[in-house]
Length: 74
Image (cartoon, rainbow, N blue to C red; front, side, top):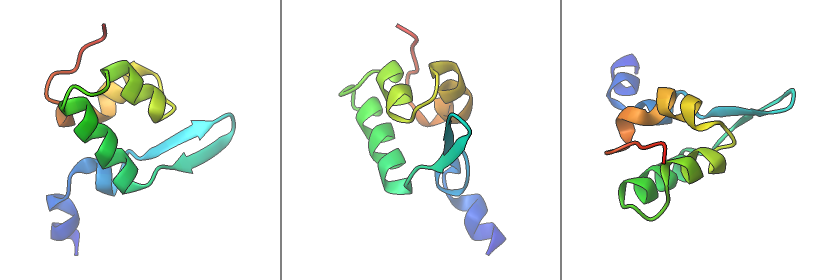
């Protein structure tokens, strides 16, 4: 089972948690994948993707920058 988790993209197994005040939220994997796909397709900006995940773009870059083809901070 661990080897299966190691083969998954890191957004499936971890890094989907965000917080709203003191409340922690785990974003659905399908939603996270759609946002990554839209960002890679150029449909939304890197900053918009971070906003959709309720995190600042620097945290987003730390967690998901390697999943996005060309992260920018424009």
